[in-house]
Image 1 (tube, one colour):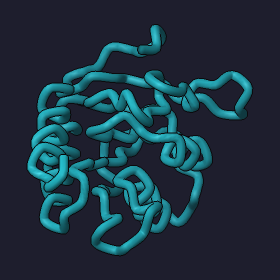
Image 2 (cartoon, rainbow, N blue to C red):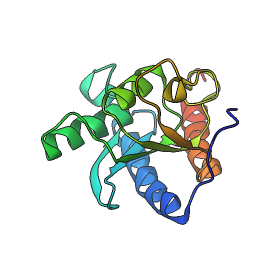
Image 3 (tube, rainbow, N blue to C red):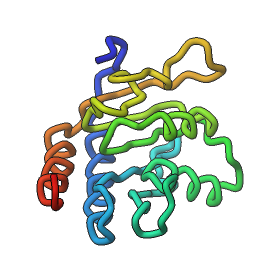
Length: 160
């Protein structure tokens, strides 16, 4: 895993609880339980999101993208500088691209994604020095709880 991951704070832990609530809500529509919360620089929740791919038959409806879309609508701007995105699973390449495009300053995530992660495990898109924006990354916040939610979901699926 990436060696430039910063230590998490108590505030990150609190925000992760809200992201976990969103992840659990995703289960209701049969979606992979991933949740996200986008927080302003002052600590106010701007938007929440959860996986909604099954719900909307939309391959781009990952929790992070849903939260970014909602926040952009709420603030009236696609650029979201000063914000922190808290998500239960390490963002994938698509989500990392959206995070960079929105100019999010920080990403806090729970479980590492050893198959598709783009914040330090498989790829490190969020901190790639060749790009025009880089993001601070805080990993492993409530990792066991976030990981268990995913493990339980995939174990319960037929054919898994």
